[in-house]
Image 1 (tube, helix red, strand yellow):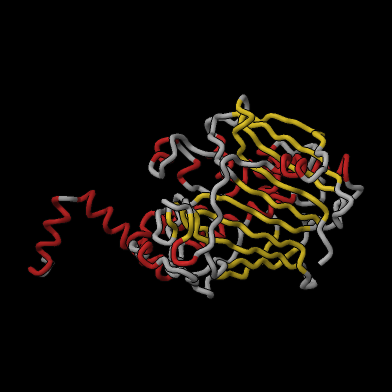
Image 2 (image 1 turned 90 degrees about the horizontal axis):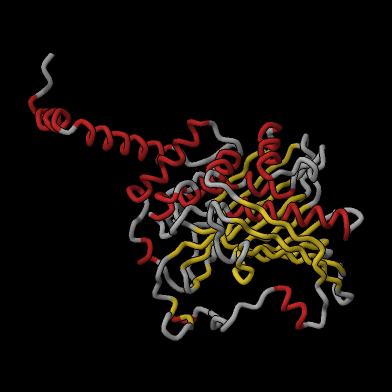
Length: 375
């Protein structure tokens, strides 16, 4: 049966440009999937779900507002309905892959989840949240800049209820827009056992920040940049406290570190995979996942806490700031200092500093770890 004459131009296009036609058809299919897929029901994606997700991200400029910068304004609010609720039950094989990747075989408790593992599990549903049309900003190229954690030991065989959302308020900085994502886990009794916030930077130049005077335009608060970055160790020394170095360890990353960690946590952001894909987003080389560097440093700190500071973990808090990325293939050094402050409610804390091997002045990460304050 001969096709209608009205389809002749389309058939000519298909026969003349078959590859281009296939690409366009695939993109249209992905857009249709995006419109029909608005939620995520679990923490561990299948290969199909993962490929669909990153297909969404690739074509996101076609279904998101590509002129999002024009919508930036003072006191803007993001969509309050960008949130998910889903069950969390740790996958034994994935937990073991995480332990092997970070070399935690001798540090991880056999019946408990590594504390930073939970944060890594939240990466996939968070990216699903960002891929939705209602989320204003682009996803690929965003940079992980800050985490806050409050947690207690979690059993591997426990079942939890997970909650994640996008915080409505944003923060304008010299380098772009910071967006924060609160995460929660509740146990079977409905009690909060895990809380965290993840902050990412969406790089851009925006009119709400005056780059000439280093002050925020339109009344948006911003502090002038310091002439020299002051580290946490120096801050405590200035307060009359005496941070004591209790552990120092060097980690050497390999050329495939980004790809191997991506396989464990299901975060295939191209800035972590290859030099060529990282350069598309302004990096000279692929950079390590923030959670990879953070997990190594924080798990090392928790090992110090258990062995040299606290008798038991109880409820803990950690504040982690990612200052600059670590490039895949480089070595970085983790230094852990113990600080005792009799004026503080919890008394003791650890300061974690990550620097580049051979360039001690190049700081990549700073964090504090301590027993949680009473709430």
